Amino acid sequence: MKRLVIIFIMMLFSFCSSFGQEAGATSNRNPVFLFENFTPSVIRIREKVVRGVMVNYDINNQKLYYVDGEHVMEMTNSRDLDTLYAADSRFVWKNGSLCEYIPEDYGSVYVKREIRKFSDIENIYYLVCNDREYTVRDLSDLYEQFPEKASETRNMVHEYGLSMTDVDGAC
Image 1 (cartoon, rainbow, N blue to C red):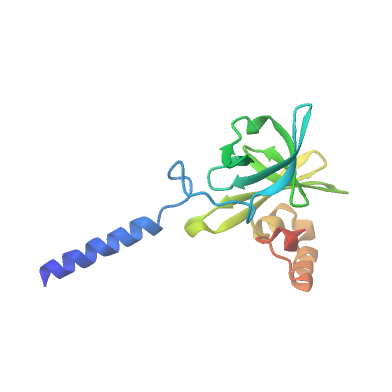
Image 2 (image 1 turned 45 degrees about the horizontal axis):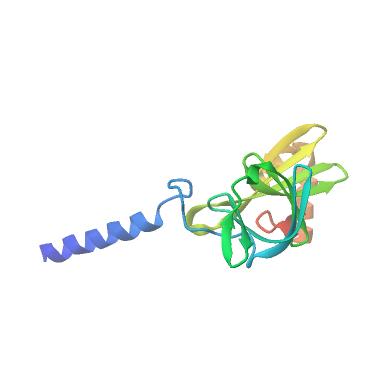
């Protein structure tokens, strides 16, 4: 019986340690790609424009990959990238990650995808208004950053069913 309990505890420990590890704890984690497949893009690096490159971004390891013939290659100079146009979106480097850039009349929105526990993708929004940057992870951050608009924002969220996890639902 004692042996059975020890085996059970070891199995439980093994199970917990494999699922309890948060993102960022190790390097070279399993890739989680932004796009379902490699997608055609236009890349601007400094003064050069490269069209028709098939790319995908590994959110988990913050690496940009492209297809070269039959090989998938990591873009080693990706920090030199000015702009990436892919999947009807515009991406730029912001705070060390590739972020979707959404220009708005009031300023700019940068959407960073990040992996949280159990491979859930979380969006982090950087709102730039009047030369000030706000970081918003969820609706409570939004209400806290803009308290004078909290009531109006709550009503909009409820009325339109907005979501902070879905970029289409958030913008």
